Image (tube, rainbow, N blue to C red; front, side):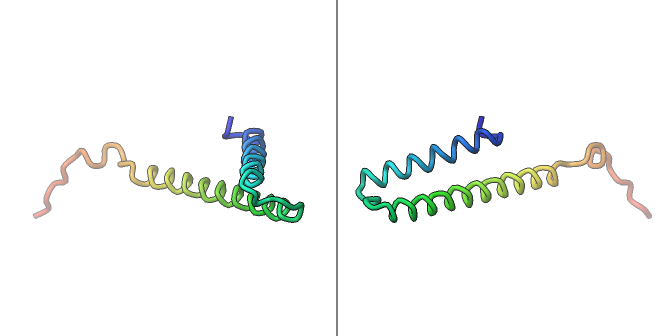
Length: 82
């Protein structure tokens, strides 16, 4: 579910509402202006977190593809030239 656009949309709102509920319970978001600032901050955290996670997955896939040995090239011994 989390890989598609709908999953990201659902996770975004779960993250945002969860953060706002926790802030309300802790007494951080007691005014409307604090709620707006906290909503913007949570949205930025979510977006940056997902961008960094996507970049790290992309880099890991590139490293895995680059480190894969070529088939047949290393199994044969090279003959020494005299």
